[in-house]
Length: 553
Image (cartoon, rainbow, N blue to C red; front, side, top):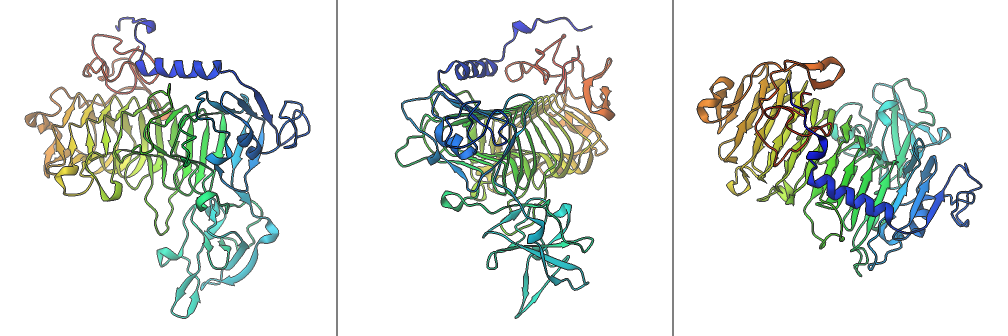
């Protein structure tokens, strides 16, 4: 029987800092404005004062009018942008650090998007494929990206064979657009589509052909200006939905908090940011072409005063799209690379992902791979399920990074964990002191090894107190195949568990431990790294830590 532990006795330091930040957010004096594209509270117009009864109409008006300490409330509706939102649109005051808050009321969906629907009348048949299928085209701006063509048919790009133009349905690969591809001709300013039924595609297809400063095409670009007026910029987005054809939110300055937001429909990354400039809490990321979140090293000076440490928590990363295009970098869930440091990834769910590298990457391969791609990165209390690709979690050029108290299940990969050089086989880009403890590896299809670490790729690896119940029964360590039963002879898994775990309802994805589970009280004492479980319950609840993301109660 587990002993009772009062929740008040253990308060994670990072939660305390975040609570202070949020208290400061709500206490900051300022004005409240309303933007209401559907005129729910009163007739909308950007010439209005922005009250509830006389609201603004557009997102651009809201972004360009609010200042530090102000709150803008977006009522339910779709807010379409004709260009990217940029730092230059904001009212910047380097002497002020109070946040600008943009939010939607509870129960209302406000969508900020730079996608536009293609009218059914814009589609015209222009050619046929070699097999006789109709090819339709619609006008689009230069560099257009289409997010949902494959829901309606086979998207195509024009290919050239000598002096003759040819249409292809399946080969060569660079002539065919995948989900979210740039299915367009830059010269002709068109997008193309081959429907499965031979009929015009209708009016349900959307594309992104907006351009922003620097021709970015991002939804929001927060970039440092020459006068450094952004140095104290702090933005809070709450309960908003962002969708875009390229990167969703690009952050190169200031600090941004995303709370209970939805980010979806990107050709590239949904969130691309510098290390330490974001808190993500309770968000939903899906339908992304590259990474849901891509974090790299800071390069523009100190963060605004009072900002909390970077954390990605209690969010969902799922159902990405595979984009085949020249220059495509690959698909990942969350990638932390380029020297980023002290980031916590906790309590998240990663599922239904098709990854080129991993659902989570601790480190990476910046500019071909550099020493020290990630420092003191911690992934704890996360659930990874139904992942397909080479790996679930990749360590690459990392220093003192930790994978603790996670669950990895139902995935089909080459290796569950890969510990690799950032630039193979450069020893300067090896991983130093990687820690893999208190994790559950269960019911995965492992083609090569549970863990793969080429010779010299990991120095002072700690791998212990994990539950491994897998069809695959080896680890590949220093290029040597080691059966799981022989790991203790090499100093690994000396306190490991190889019995299947017991869950409340595995089929329904309830991964809380059931009574009698071998995960109970079998984990290493990691209270310096993991003070609570995925539910917020303090650890430990009994004589010792439990293995996996949840404590037995």
